[in-house]
Image (cartoon, rainbow over all chains, first blue to last red; front, side, top):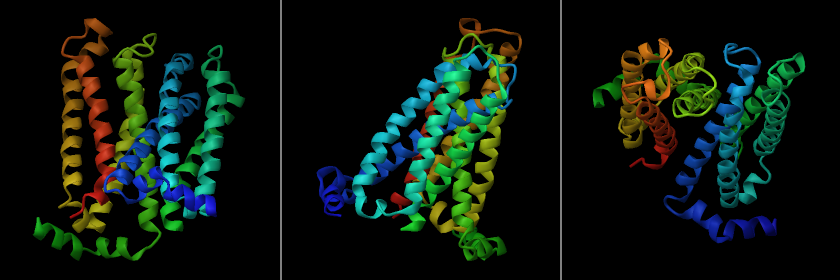
Length: 152
Length: 160
């Protein structure tokens, strides 16, 4: 608890929670990063599940780097948002579920890219299973993330 | 504007939206899902037009315009419900107004693509063979949708 208060009182924590534009700017970056990461990940998974069959899955590899870019933005903007309300977020159930959802979504999408998008071009039942799982995980992360504010 | 706000506030739908506590967060979740779908699709299509994943013909990538349209439709519907539910919050808001204008410009950008560029894409033209500023259209689209997301997110923070 002491540590959480110390984080909130840090320079960054105060900038996010108490300055006029700190919070909206970091929040906007977080929304953008989400759109890039979740948007691209969802579409990669949807392609594996059958959307746009005329497009070979293997040409979509470069887009994974774009999604990673979104993740990096959100890792930093998310960490900054956490410093602004550490003592409440740490105990927020929706926040815990969101972190688990993001972790699983990221792991499954990365795995899908590794064995399917960067594979030999064939799409197997396993690939479709991973794709479906990743969509589910991203949905959980998105729902829980949106509900954080309603849980506090 | 005042009359419109008053009218929306008097509708049955307005009362309903505001009386159901679960409805607003549910709509927000769909609005966020829709924006992911829209921006993800736009990224794939526009970056392709700017030179990523050149191996695949532009016309095939157009499939992702369907998911973009689905994302946009979800957000158009949920967005309209937000406005009916809380018109005082949105209609006078400066970030909301600029956001609406930029969405309109993005729509004109799509129309321009359909009118000027799509016929060439259908004939199989690519990259430098496309006349009419394909790269500018793609870059403008990415910029506009990025600004739309940021403006939407800051609506609550620019209230007077």
